[in-house]
Image 1 (cartoon, rainbow, N blue to C red):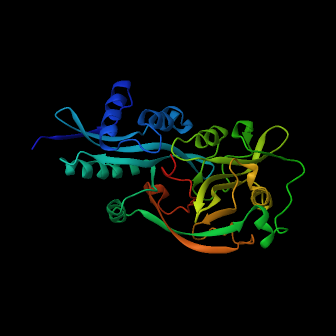
Image 2 (image 1 turned 90 degrees about the horizontal axis):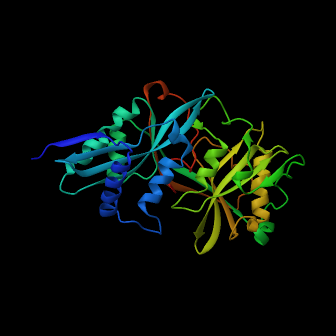
Image 3 (image 1 turned 135 degrees about the vertical axis):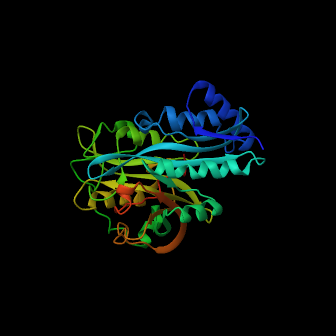
Amino acid sequence: MPKLNISPYPDTPTARAELVEFLNRQLPPQNGHDWPQRLRHWWDENPAAAINPERGRWVHVEGRLVAYGGSIPALHAWQEQICQTVYATTFCMDGQFPKAAAMVFLQQREIAAQRMIIHSTPSPRVQEALFKMGARAEQSVTRHFFPAGLASHLRGHSWWPSLPADKRVVTDPAEVTTIARPYQCADRIEKWITPEYLRWFCSATTREHHFLGLVDAAGMLSSYLLVTPRLLRGLRSWDVLESFTTQEDRSDLYALVGLLVKEPGLLPGGALIVTAAAFPDDLTWDPPPAILCRNQHVCHFFLFPEPLRQAPKHTIMAEGDLGL
């Protein structure tokens, strides 16, 4: 049996050309994207990539690439500091070398010793392996449904707070110059937010993302929503993937959702429903007047370095490689 050689993926032009050829063969492009474009988004355009060098692992046999497990660099906050994290992605192999896949996966122990790893699209087999590795799993959310447009009068149209008079609504993240602070709460792990991150996320290649935020006269952002369109039983909906506010209460955040509920055409294409999902212990969406709440299965798994293993974590839908 030829020897399997595993190593960190070095993102040189030659290595990327080899990787693109392998991915095109193993995972042919779908939905209009191509692998060079997607890799540029992950590594060339991603602002987290400048300080986070992790790109994944690959395996060769006699000089031929036979397996790859990818990493998208990301940044999280913990106690007011940046934590380098990675989104696990694109786990694939040549079927002639099943042991290569196990080698790539086991290398996650080495990566997780230094950086939190987030899986949001693991296969059932990978989920089993993650449990054995001691991953923290978040597998359920409560999705809240709010009728939008003319239908918003059916329930709680007047509940939503007014928009603050000293701020303006923006739908283009390019209008954000600074952020009041790059996290919401210092005593939990959560995403580290920058204007560059918002622009990058909204330029994703595999899913449509839209931004709705509140800025002051100088362009400083204090609250925002990131949403994506989805067909819900044939009806177009706006799904809130990420919400953020640096305010002491959630009134500005609810004002933004209320605006989207009342004027869903503010973002391209419009919608008849706005939905928001909350992980356990997240009470953000309990107060607003939902017409329906429903439990939904999700697949968010987290491997932590030892210093972060017991830290509280704020989990949202827009983590991992979903939509990237």
